[in-house]
Image (cartoon, rainbow, N blue to C red):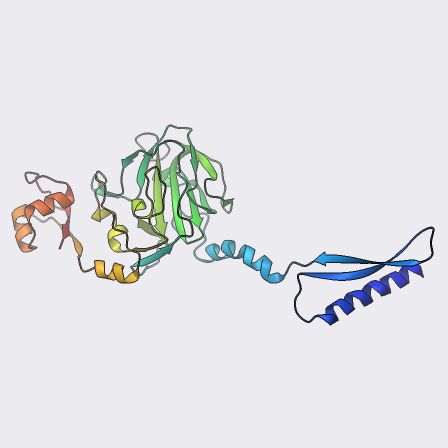
Length: 314
């Protein structure tokens, strides 16, 4: 009988508490009868129970849910292969700094751009095999496996949609779907895949479009992100507009209007044909030979090869 009275009291108190307040509270208070072994008097004790609302739990999980909704594939290096992207691209950051992917001073041995007749779609950072490699920003590991020429590779998707790749590793310490923090350990640097020496091949991409990493990140000791809002044009998403041996002059576009205005100064790629000369190409495109040579890092005396690609700044 004593326990029956107890449960009736708990039910009545709980119902009464909610009936008094139609709004969602942060906690509920219930009164529980408590009896003593030595006294028959019933003592009413009030207990407060905190509530976790449904909204709170969803908000906490939103970042993880959102970045996995779009082309989340843990078995493919680039799941956006057949996706068309509209330029200019908008990328937003909540951080003002990033974590250096290596703990020592960053020495870039090869930059984003055209290299040996092929696009080099990332930057190479010098390291010794076994050096720790960490994530530049918070995110979730989307890919952690061997990937052809990249060797042992980790791809992290960050909460703004940007993906960063860490290639040629000697050891992978994470697995797909792992949540990673800024500066979180990913593995050890190495020389796996198509590599001529131990280094970190670092790639930045957005919805499958490669982006010049130095347009987004300042790889000096400051480790700063160029801007909280960046707009990326094709100039910064195609390696053919840059030379892997030269530092590209970065002019950050922080609005859509600025990005569209920059398109007025167009660049195009010219494929050398039989009988072409620098003089003839310069005349047909109203460009000086010096400008063509400077843009493509060649000399006026350099012989042209059929099929060679030249970037022309119009």
